[in-house]
Length: 240
Length: 160
Image (cartoon, rainbow over all chains, first blue to last red; front, side, top):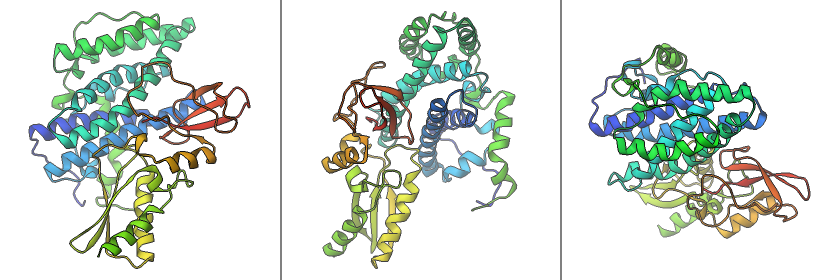
């Protein structure tokens, strides 16, 4: 790895793998930023475990994309510019407070869970194998986020207000998670009962943010990548 | 030839999981295959969790132990299909886990309901009056519980 950037020929399959991989890597990186800052020791372990799962999913998906595009997983993670990343914008938003982090984990995990379930029956066996493993991990993430959102929403006035504000701010970023309205309906059927049980208001579907899948990102991704990529791009081929 | 593969398999199967040293990779069911390909002994292993940080260590230990037994060249390969589930763990593995103080996973690796869990029996006193402290424990494959009878906290291997 002695170059500092790569260009990719994205076949439809590579693009799909990169969308899934970039979602997992960027949310995994954001989640890992909680290390040392979580509100409870148990939550410290939980968020670190979830980040590890997500980065593990990203590695398997990058390895598969790399088999087809001729790159290593490290090259795909470290040597692409923001415009080459295919993750949904919701993944790259800064962590905010604990309520924002939990609400995002819920909204994203509910969507990923459905993606992995439908991918199990794919003719693409390599991807189906990744889905079989990732789906089990994501089910735990969804459950964890749901339990916390209910506790926060149905907690104190302060935690309720923060959870509601998080859901409201995140909602416009959820449109990009789905290709069809049927997918969004299936997701709603999972998310709505949890939001209701948390005594929170489900925001109305209005105008939705998009652009992440085609490489048009918020300014936050550049800052995230700068930190994540600085070493391999400053010292090409560095090993330890 | 067959002897060489069987010998390699016997050595690889004794490699311990660095995070749960009471268990071998054979017990865990992550040792998938030992075969000969173009003169190279190829050992196939599968991850329990995709981000499992122990996989690199396990691969290194397989290579080191086989080299120490004079078996070379060796290649360790990571396979993803079929996906590992807790059903791949053998009976000996479940017994060793319990003796080590970790509640073994319940049989059947199917999808669970979103909320609510069957109680995990305490590995120390056997009581089923236990509560979950966190679904995420000391490693990615374990959850953390507390026994309400003997009052001891304990790890359980997560159903997966």
